[in-house]
Length: 171
Image (cartoon, rainbow, N blue to C red):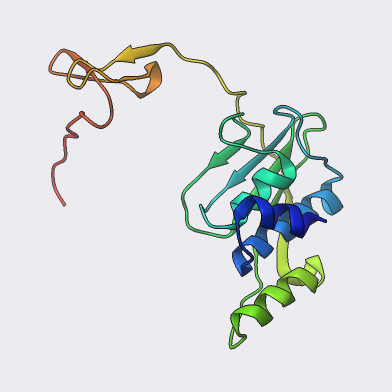
């Protein structure tokens, strides 16, 4: 059931989607969580690969709700935090495809025991702040509005990140 729902959302079947499906199963199994109605379940993903679509479709952790947080390390690491219980777990993909063909690796990911696919551990961390709404500020260069926390001050003007000229020195 998970696989079909995630595949319909993502648009095709692939090993990356299988990783996402299995990390959702791992979170349900090891943490006893359910898909989020609002922000009670948070996922911090450390990659922007196909598996994140499974997390969105199966656990209802989304960027728009503010309970899917992207931390760009490029690792297949997913941290789930249950705001209700305070329980947090980090799941790291340890399953490597080695010489397996793509289809065989996908099949392996979908059928191997969770303990063979992921290393996981409980964490003692605080849940991130709930999503906030910020006032929109128009950029004084391009005129496009951006949320207040994304505006920079440059030469006395309020500017968006696209118009902001970052000051860099050195290497």
